[in-house]
Length: 429
Image 1 (cartoon, rainbow, N blue to C red):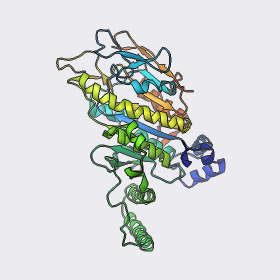
Image 2: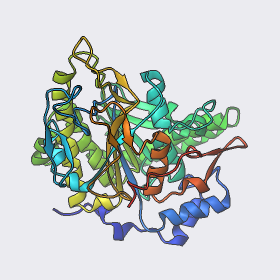
Image 3: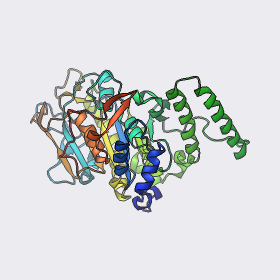
Image 4: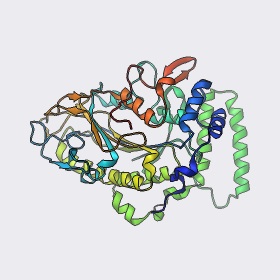
């Protein structure tokens, strides 16, 4: 299969001068960091442009029915464990396709987090549980957008593909400000009115944009800078998207890809996520809902996990075949796991004490399952880690040294990752 031009690492390497120049211009989101930290960022980016595909399984995926099966035990449930492409590592039988790509993956089975509710857990996991919980930290996607910025394509650095409504959400940006929010594509569709009307010429469109910029400048003179910057930024990145409307054209998809990824929503959204990476988007977040299986957990998992397994494995296969796993970090996780105990509704409740997740790609070891749980899967047995450890690990995998960097929150220095945690060496290549 021919590689997409952006997938050819050799063709898209930064020289040191290019990256430092970009940093000086703010093109890699260096504002708010010291000159020394900007140099460190430039060093991390000089060889290749890292990207992230972040799969958010909202509600809490059951580790027993996915990454850490415990068949024939008190809490194991009805599903078997099956062998994978890596001898000695097993997954749930609900993940047969992912089992075939385990040689590319790194699974973590010993997450021990703090929050037992969605309202706290969703934000805490995606913000990395900073030590200073009185400050609204950015989500991981916003942090990457700030630290690494857009790729050389100029496309928006942080986009989301999700069910239901889309639009720009400033919430993810936290104290970084609205500019570092996420541009969501609801149902994987482009923003409304993104295409230029046929009766509007290119010259007329350019004139309209020039007028818009002047009005924005007048608007910003009397209002908060962060809000006016975000407003202008949304228009600017939308202009970049207008040149790539083919991304959303389903008629250009390979029918075999559609079949491999699945015709369900998550399959379509994961395939669109791959296309976004190929076009050069820095951070793509694909969201799947309805994983909160308090009732009928096993039938729910039989449906949900299989729908995840199909496109996730196809994505790993495609990124590996295209050579993109050398450059792309793939992450799949929830806000917590599910209880070992099966409740009276044949469901599993919230369980942050001991759960699992899957990863693959740049900076990570391949074909490993790090950490372990006890025989019944009730608590961590080995390598007890929290989300702060994962943020350090992800940044390191992307070539960023979080221990050498700080945010500048209006003069308040803040660590980019929890300073009392560190990277998980068992996962890093």
